Image 1 (cartoon, rainbow, N blue to C red):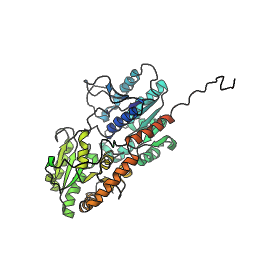
Image 2 (cartoon, rainbow, N blue to C red):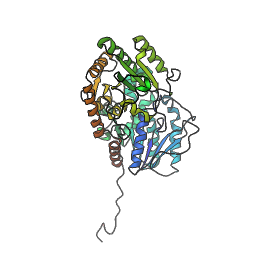
Image 3 (spheres, one colour):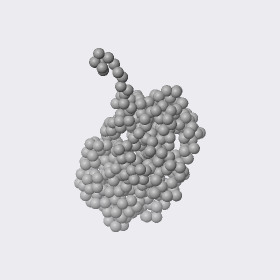
Image 4 (cartoon, one colour):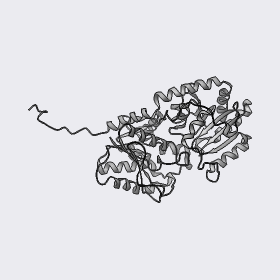
Length: 419
């Protein structure tokens, strides 16, 4: 097939861990690569956010990334991108040179859906959409902190009604689409995110020396975007409760941010979190590392005792799967996709968000029972390999793509009528 992936703000070329670079970037990058390896021709359309980007970037076998103009060629927060989506859509159409070049368009995020809908209007190309986050759910959890315009909901409702198929990333996502957006259940397919198990897997524990951490120290990892909704403040308070309530000292590594070195001027959330650590009396136990390249993530997952992620809102969350792929036990908030990927009592623990006491109790058990953590790690690896590899994800997507293809026209021939 010839496939267009549209991802207006989340480019596969972006540096992961920055404010608007996270799970969607990973999803688009790995889906594109796996589809290309499977023999499909894939173009990824994203917004040109730098004047230095070439018109086309080769991105693996059979894959091109095409940055198109939409507003000034610089970083613009995704919440401010909607006024530029008409130009983005026209730029994508212009690349098609007046012909239908694709068998299917896969939009990622609601703003990409605008361009996908325009493609179908222009060329009749069927389109599927993965929302990655839903405006009604985001507004429910973030309230006035949600910076998207109110029109987002209207656009999402139009896309739900118009798309040939809707990709839900987890059962909760499917329920939200059906219950909040009246999505026809038969047009919603559940296809999760995945992990590259050739890139992420069990290994040595080499990173402790880098941070001066003793081999017998209990080490907790928080990795990903450093923004308020990720609940890193809850993890810091959990480390403090672990000391106060259970008498256990732990070191917390916080990986992520807008720069390679932790800089509150570039990542304001780091400053807020550092103040919380100071107030809780654990500042010496919290290490902010800054962002790290993707190639270094395996060392972090393999070099700690437990990975913790307790956001109060998370549409899916790839990092728990990455940790599980490396044999690291996971403690996650019982929200969104995390309550689907992490099996409580099997691959780790699920805890309520914003509950440092509950988190501390689970951390204490893992610190006191290392064999339990090893058992969780082995179960996590099995779970990822059996259901969450990018090969399995793209195979499921291929099935969805083929389902929306128009039936081939029936041609009458002499053989057909028996002559």
